[in-house]
Image 1: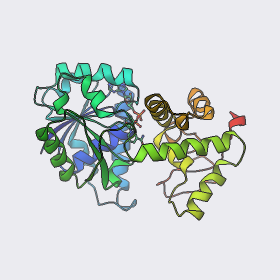
Image 2: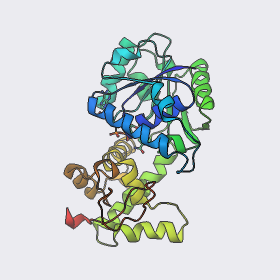
Image 3: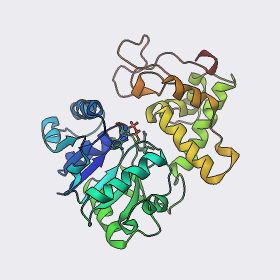
Image 4: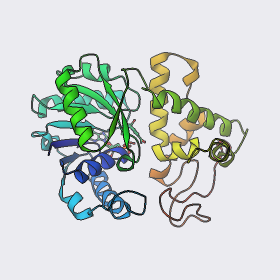
Length: 305
Ligand code: NAD
């Protein structure tokens, strides 16, 4: 059993905390918001109860919740052996957090960045312990995904790498090795096609439903790019594309203005109840009543918002 700190209790942090607790680790979950912590615990309980229905193992929700301690105080991480960071994809926010983690965490603690795109060597440079910083790009929803991208930074030590690999193995996660580069493998590719899918809607070439239907019915993907965008979060995808755009200075990563408009309007996808689709028990014409994919209903094009 490892004592693992999880910072950020949003979509990813809640999933990481649940998954760690399922495998018997002692989890310290920290967020700046009490409300986010409460919502994370509710979501974890629901996900545990639904695990079998969603094709996962039977999970004892009470046991999982008993393995997770929550707080808004970073001091809770003082005894953590590993800290997994899952706060928004904003370099200023993350830099400030890593500086504070350096102060509160024990010297041997290894920091794991669950970032979508920020290079791990850069994150290491924000700390006094770059040899103890590694990247793990978890996939969403974390407890259901068998693999992660594993990204050591330039200075990551073999010992820190070993610690993180062992932790991942203990959670039955396959680590796919990737050298440190902005966006790694998955987001370097997926964010280009999600962004381009948003442009198709923005330009009025097709509806979101039509774009997604091509991916599902013609390519055999289980979800279309705009459904995936809603699952990840419009704000998170936009921030990640901005990181790619800034890093490579290449117009192929130019963020679609529709994503900016949606983020400004609070249309963040599933987490806010509306993105390219609307979600919720009251939404008419639910496409997925099992709850796994939420309740898809209406599509809003760029001109609608
Ligand atoms: P989110 O917006 O759902 O959650 C972020 C949480 O961090 C919020 O609860 C917020 O209150 C909290 N937070 C903000 N500042 C904080 C601070 N200083 N200290 C503690 N908590 C703080 O975001 P998310 O989707 O969970 O993404 C988190 C990270 O994971 C991002 O870097 C994102 O790029 C990456 N990621 C996201 C996905 C995805 O599918 N959403 C997949 C892989 C990686």
